[in-house]
Image 1 (cartoon, rainbow, N blue to C red):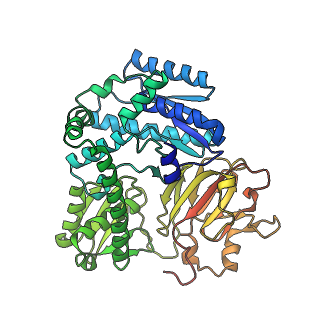
Image 2 (cartoon, helix red, strand yellow):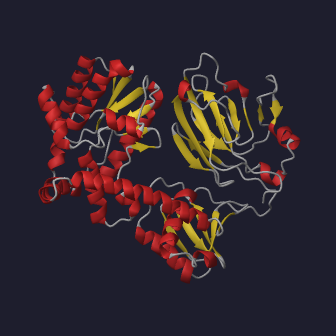
Image 3 (cartoon, one colour):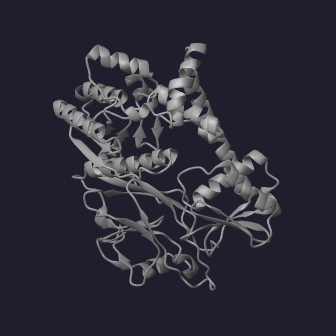
Length: 468
């Protein structure tokens, strides 16, 4: 595990780790290994256990077991009871459980100031994920499987370790664990892959798990490269409209290689409609059919919005963010929540905003136009991103604590009125935190006493005078 942590740079000395502990063999081995590493690396460990209550007394037994073990190791434990609809389809139930689980992890990591969320996925889990996506029908993105490090927040130190090695470690160390009866339920396709397909692969090729892991890494690199190529191609066809929403020039789009058409459309939908997960091939192909043959005014509904055909373009319109500005000077009120950690696409400019909690010692040294750092202990939540409102004031850095009207600030910078209402503002309950891309408010600047911070970034440069 230590080799994986070092080579993949998963976490560092003196980090605070939030460890997901189900009570099963993988998570119990992970907790034990991190506890052994704790003194040498000066780690702070906190555990989290999610109880869905779907297995009755077995679920309660898992919680009691994890609580006892964390008490023995003197590791603080957070228990979350999460409620699911038992009548949901099995695939829907799993997806809902995953969503609630990751949401809980993020919330608790923010509450306790954890630097990383640590999961116990193994090489076997990676192989099962790849095979699952392959059987469902997928492209390179699905074949890339699970990354060892997801956006610097969620890490998988056992990513290169096989399940048999985990069981041997537990047996040799005399460590108990719980068996989840649902892992034997044949209704789940993953379970059939685990118990029927994987053993056959291991008999045919003993190194099959390692081969699948290498395969996933290669697919992930290729997937990233093709995303870059698609983005470069789409840059000549993609336009952000002043009244909001991305458009793609249909003529340009249809000249691209078909594989990059699909990839580019998928990524535009994800960005435009603020969708974290990739859309299915069938949906993407329906959009491409519209581009080639759709009549003006026809549309296709997709998750989070719809795609509309105009005489020359495809328009990507979120359900809750569509507006028409009959007059370019007419401002429209925009307001969207942003979690910690979290990200969103700002419909006024097409910029993507991110917020990430960090230990202050790990934060970037200097703020930039596209990045600021604030003291997490001084700022309240919820955080929102909105546009200009009448009477807005803030205390810009560099003005010795003096307050200034935001309209006057924009006037001083000679920012056109048609642009001002589209500039995103990050706002806390106490006031404006950041005029994105321009100036941060001094009230939340880190000090010598700062231990935890929030890092806000924006992907694209801010609008400037003359920008359409």
